[in-house]
Image 1 (cartoon, rainbow, N blue to C red):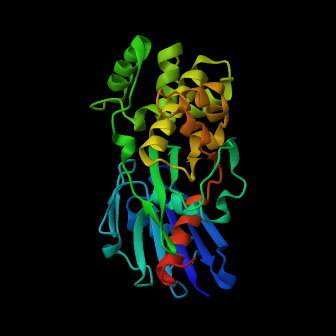
Image 2: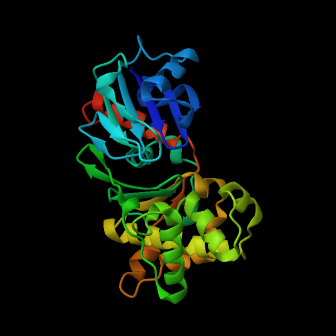
Length: 316
């Protein structure tokens, strides 16, 4: 039996939970959600956690914090979508077994837990046991990861692929590419500005002239809306490219708040049409199982899974 502190610190929300591993399974005992931008620093965020009555010391055997950014040395991360960073050397979590992992590495680990038990099937496919599993998801940013088998344990790949330039095709998309680059103020149009909440706002603005929040857009659009069709096509392209980069024969999980709140953005026909669009690997792409994981606490389960591996020598 062990108690694991798990956290999922993103650009919008910071989630905390305690898990009990009694009986060989991960059981969430309690959880807490806070707004990331309402904290002045990581230390201030922890003070808010303590002030809520959530225990941060005394009973914790391991602590794993998933963070939305590149992790350095397992202890430090600058959050690109928050005004502060995280450094475990500056705080006391009550246990020497503590580390940071990328938030989408946590989403990958979550694929080995009950967090994905109710994931929606987008494409049934033909999963290959023990093969690489890909994870991708649009939220504040476009997260990427992969789950790789390594003997009796699983290793999650950390990635910042959302900051790579995004591929566009044809003259219409070329016009949008320049609009996206200019409107976002980035050096180039990237996954983080195309297949995210920001990307939904920008493509809708480009197509309609309306500058609306993603929540308002999601409430207005239908499966026939050009905004839906363009965004679903871009999401399918991002998923296709990641599935081909990994040869994810174990399947592909879609996470992140954008599709969780509006599944139509990955169930619209344009999504699979674009996912299958390959003159070389069409047969493989049709064989990849695709699931939409809408569980907003799956990052916590993934962080806890990694904590259990740390405590038990690689065994779940």
